[in-house]
Image (cartoon, rainbow, N blue to C red):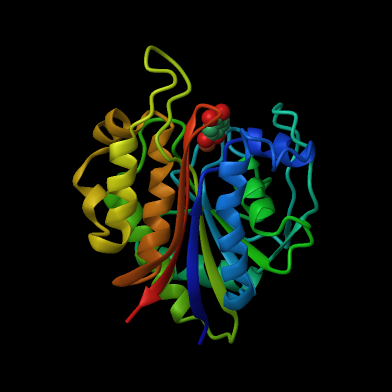
Length: 279
Ligand code: DHB
Ligand code: FE
């Protein structure tokens, strides 16, 4: 059976793409952010994943406001990105793991999740930049399965529902007939709000409590509805739902291997965590 080797959760601010392109990793502004990924990459060398299941939210590249699935799972042979207007160069295509895609789709539908299945799918900065932080040479030694959660157009799925989705995906991966090693990657957050009266809003104490909760009390954030989470974390900070689904996929217990938290990157409180399943 397949094995989940661990999880990485990280912010996905578009400015990271420009910083990589311009090689600004050692500049004072960027160093505290990029330094947080050195340990992540060391951990990846021993975790040796073959496949990455990526929980992320599309921001209008593949799904626009006219058609917005709550949950979408990719089942394409390959995934490319495209110009989103942030000035990030496009990067090499990702190879899909279609056998795992269809296994997840079948298991999710059998468990009453009404997902959208995507046999063609563009992936945006929320997918590509975290992958580039994990594998800076962009030679992708892994295959991928994208799982998209709507956090851009209301109504949003609840934290409770996203947790249940993650649990189901974790169970399905552990029941997948394969000897492949699977990494779960969740991207978004932490607290940030890009528009309106609270533009620039960041909530450090909430972010820290949230990161702590993932190993100590993983369902902690599911006590709030979407509006309450937006109030605490900001309209885009609700992207923490990806972290929650990712954590849920690890199973009942998880231990923290590494974290970094830095304010601000662009308008965002940036965070990265590595977790492993625990007995
Ligand atoms: C920013 C953060 C995001 O999560 C995003 O998707 C776009 C922009 C930002 O802070 O600039
Ligand atoms: Fe975002």
